[in-house]
Amino acid sequence: MQNIFAFFRRNGAQSGLVAKDRLKNVLMSDRVNMQLLEDIKYDIIGVIRNYMEIDEDKFSISIAQTANKYTGVKTPVLFADFPIKKIYKNG
Amino acid sequence: MTEIIVVTSGKGGVGKTTTSANIGTGLARAGKRVAMIDADIGLRNLDVIVGLENRIVYDLIDVVEGHCRLKQALIKDKRCETLFLLPAAQTKDKDAINPEQMLKLCDALREEEFDYVIIDCPAGIEQGFRNAIAGADRALVVTTPEVSAVRDADRIIGMLNANGLGSPMLILNRIRPQLVKKGDMMSVEDVSEILAVDIIGIVPDDENIVVCANKGEPAVLSEKSPAGQAYRNIVQRIIGHEVPFMDLEKKDGFMGKIKKFFGS
Image (cartoon, each protein chain N blue to C red):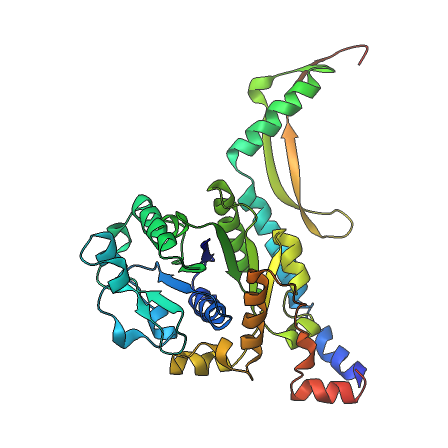
């Protein structure tokens, strides 16, 4: 009997889990605002300066949904993009 | 000491007014002196849910504008001696009042020595919301286990925090245990994990709520209504008693019984 119920369910993923994942993602982007990204950018620049010289004017930062290469599961990923001018020798 | 509690949600249609009516009535039934305020100016509804729509003479705006005294506008409930309703104005809009006036009204209510004042907040995050929360000591956020409702609840929780109403508590409304069990509805745990707030009540989806709304009698007064029981529990928690959460599994439907029989 259990198999019958399992059979009927097999055709669709449990929609409660789908809802939870969608909700997590939507809240993630709701909670991220420009100020937050600016703060992160500021902090990252502070750390990176210790190791290399970068073009701070061309520094861009964003969060985007990206599918995992192997599993296909979509997760939000933070992208920080900056041209390196020079790497300091002694790290 | 008067405790002023605002019932809010962000999204409309998740059960704010029903929740306000049941908590207000339940607190009064528990012996407390209670005033319920309908802060949804222009879309008056709390009066209908508690069956007092025929007794309205003055409303909240009349009080604020000084057309009557607060006592004149407070309508005494039909069933509970210690329960009063301050109805919203139906012909005005949300700009007819501002947060400062609401604050003054709340102070006036404190002087009337109510134990609890329950404010039914309008949907949305604009002026009406700001008015409703202005004089509140604490907030209850109502949501249903749906993506849209929980998303709006998250936004509201953020706004409450920003306005000095930290640590609001959550009421999860219209839970359908069978759907949760099947995996087709987010569970209480899912929602509380995502919103990271404490839960003060879990209210099962209950047909009695429709019947009660039809009659203008809050379900909290009905012994046989599961939602009514959930509201009575919430009332006890507001008063400060520890009450375990209801076992929602108990109410299996027809299919539930069959599945159980076959050991699924």
